[in-house]
Amino acid sequence: MVGGANKVYGKKRFRLKSLILLFLLYTLAFGLDVQSINRQAYSSVVYMVKVEDFPEEMDGSLVRTWITEDRYPEGLLSEADYQRLWKACSLDKIPDRVKVSFGWTLRRTDMKMYPTDKPVSRKGSNIDYNQYTLLEPFTPLAVLNESGGWLYVHAPFMRGWVKKEDVYLSSKEELIKVISLPFLVVTAPEKEIGGLSWSMGSKLYYTRKDGDRYLILMPNMKKLWIEKDNDLHEGYLSFSEEIVKRLLVAYLGMPYSWGKLDCSAFVRNVFLVFGVELPRNSSQQMRVGNSYGCCFASYEQFKETLRSLPPYRTLIFMKGHVMVYGGFEKGQPVVYHAVHSIVHDDSIKRYVGKVVKNRLEEDSLRNLYSKVIDVRVLP
Image (cartoon, rainbow, N blue to C red; front, side, top):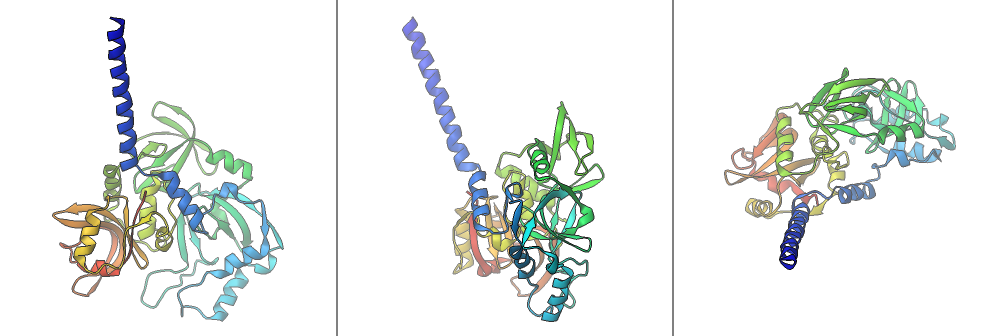
């Protein structure tokens, strides 16, 4: 009888081990290797830094180089214009050894290439090339220089100028203490909490919880009780294709905005919900993941390549643009992207100006294949 019981127990234990093995295989097959992706991003893109690991002192000449190395598209400004911009950056006040300050953004704020609100655009265009990116509340910052109400800072994925009034200055220890707190992550494209706007992927740090009520820390260090709803999740979400699709669909119709909600910011925000820290622009994002082809000879070749790749984790790159592959519908590939304008199969460029979902054949976009420079899968 004991032997029979042992056999039954042994079979149950074997069945349990088999289920665990199947679960692990499923995770490897369908989950994202977040740590691997993040390591790849931080090791391959110089703009990606862990602010909490930033040195407390650095070479002043490097800061001056960082400030002056970025340029607008050719022809927009003269060398004399750049000299005036550099003078506004107070380069002469940067010491040989810069003592780094730390802090975070108090609210959603724009990061600029140079310390000015004056747009830099081509004639007839509404694209401001001085607009680097949008920083969410509580974005960690290393502060490297100050000039006329602006701070030159390094964020986790970009460096540039932000308004001093939008920054809470702290010690490095205080910064580390705050970003080590447990957090809720925003899963809606836009969320209003405590009088502030938060985008998808933003973190709300909390100090206490009581059921679905959380005592969150606001960027000004005040505390606020909030109720967790469907737009908030405790910690990062576990990856699934269904969740990615839901997040992408939630963005549809939202207006495109260069340096704010553009193609790469859209992709970055969606995957940030899972803890994936992609770089900020599309050329940098193209350094992450595994490459599965470029320079396709025909639309059919491109189509069959996509058919063999996993949807909702495959990114399609054109020069200056990135799209998320969303599988097949009605026998044709689907892409999601935030797009300013696009050239259709009739060779006419049309303004779009929002986040859209395209079926490539139905929407006359077969010609996209000829402009694809890489297709990459997040591991």
